[in-house]
Image (tube, rainbow, N blue to C red; front, side, top):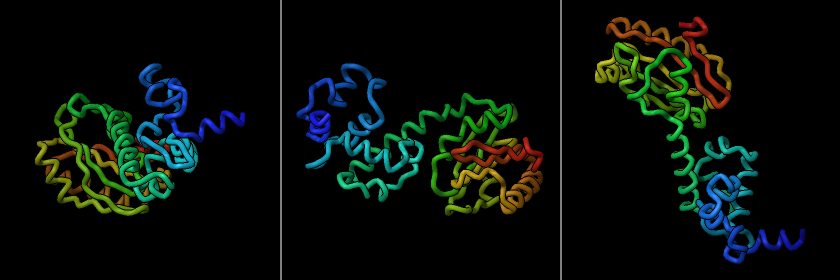
Length: 233
């Protein structure tokens, strides 16, 4: 055990080749690596007393060993760990963003038939954010997505969305219907009074432009709520 601990805290370059994360990935494939080892490849090198794997393991530990929590960390929070500088933090954040984008299907191939389709199309953009953002999804006459746009961002407990900008984007996309989406960083999916008021306001404004407001989704890391499904439209 003592020899194992000494090896783990030694520089990765002194490890057996099969134990080095980069060489392990090349010889055994990406699925053979732990989360800490994958992070170690992004981190590149450790400090005098800690290997890159040590840093990856400690970074995960600070996030409860939850990659979704890690994805919600800011650059400043990542850099709070000694041995993680701006360059390493940027590499980690870029990799997590690519992973999130990979979960987002190509929008032009999607036809929306219900709230589950909306959630699948947009949740990766919203579920791990630490602050509220407001997005819209514009659809054509056969309910295929013709545009997805961020229209507002705010703080931890609220955001502002301008109905005029929303309708302009819908008209620019030649949309016949639209769907509102925003996130609740707290994980609470219950709509606020402000959420309900904005939904009613947008529905009335869209009706005047002969555009149908189909739904308003609240998204969090805990799941989603569809106002249409809940009879709140």
